[in-house]
Length: 264
Image 1 (cartoon, rainbow, N blue to C red):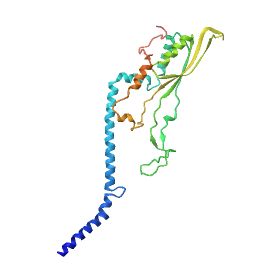
Image 2 (cartoon, rainbow, N blue to C red; image 1 turned 120 degrees about the vertical axis):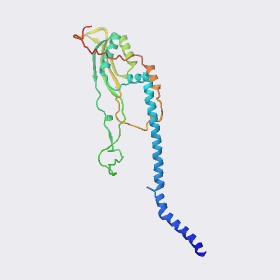
Image 3 (cartoon, one colour; image 1 turned 135 degrees about the horizontal axis):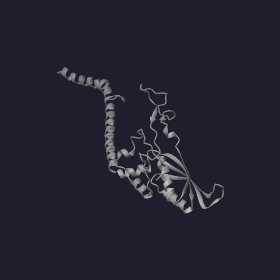
Image 4 (tube, helix red, strand yellow; image 1 turned 180 degrees about the vertical axis):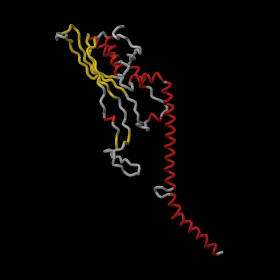
């Protein structure tokens, strides 16, 4: 009986020792114990749930784009994905002619490569890039895709005509259904080839900036707020429609061609 009474405290002592020296360190050691791994697993599950929700929202956004094709066309006409410089030249010529103006010059300057076209690297950012072995790497590794920005297409446009016609042209350009802005405008008296004044005709020299937004090939920000919602904010489309009413004429190219393109 006395042995039994002594055995119980001894077993309890042994169990406590095992818990302290063997079980508890495996349960939590501050780095990779059961407790820490469970916390990591919980965080990864939360990330997975958020990712699945974002995937559902992306599918909803894609469906909305297909459903609202008219709104999509309005936006992509206003801010296209490519230069479309021929379309700009064709439309400016048409608008000038519709305002009874004579085009004396039109030229397009293609955009230059900017800093946004170069991937951001780890050099000088204070961010340590790791190589596959897990140690710090000295080489410059891409850490994020650059945020895409609109590119500008500069157009120099000169026309000759009276003041009212020039005003009418500028108003049409302002309400043109493709994003642009008048960077500079110079109006002076028009002259003949001999250098004398040409009646009441004026010459307007305009420098216009047209923007386009190339499609990005990189995912720039998976945490963007748009992926946390299942619909687009269409207020910008309404604003475009409110401010613009001059249609962008689409170029019609005759596939068969003509023997003399200058004949009607």
